[in-house]
Image (cartoon, rainbow, N blue to C red; front, side, top):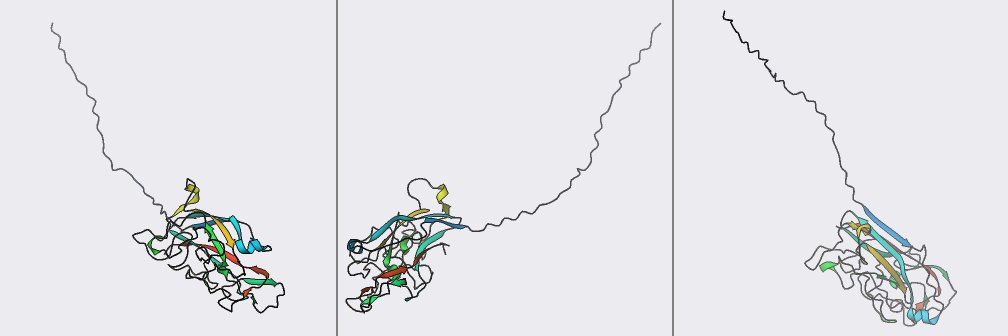
Length: 258
């Protein structure tokens, strides 16, 4: 007897059902405020004293070496300058007399120009460029004793802190606009990231005062970098600085280049 054989193929079907993807979105607004940062770190004595009590000191002057250290950090292009300041008790642009030693000589006068202070910076200004004047910085050596030379005399602007002009001295950067010979600013950066022995962001400042004989301060200069009308020329031959105690201060100004 024949058997009937039946074969069944049982299939299991896999059906994928497509659905739209669910998504939810939230936004966070981020605001960035880039504030310009100009930071001048200065290490120096609170007061520098120049005591002239010997003829050789009048003739040769007194120098304080590396008395001020300037360290700069900035996020923007910048300029740096120094300016002589006083309270103007004797006259604008002159030292303040705190004490006189009783000289009754009519040729002894109390008006000593602030620019009698001379500076020397540890390295040249790399940002003076084509805008530089005759003395664009304070990097040159101090002049020979008794030689009238305004190259290192402190910038003075009648007691104001107005930045120097294109004819005046900057420690770094300069007034004016960029030229083919260079640029009139120092780019943003910091002494913290510099290597080597020299840096546009680090300056050691020497100070010198040279009264000379007689005490007429021949190396003083006006804001234009030319010879100062010293106390002899401004008054009469034979005039000299009145003995006494005088004070003034040097202000260092770090500003964004314009």
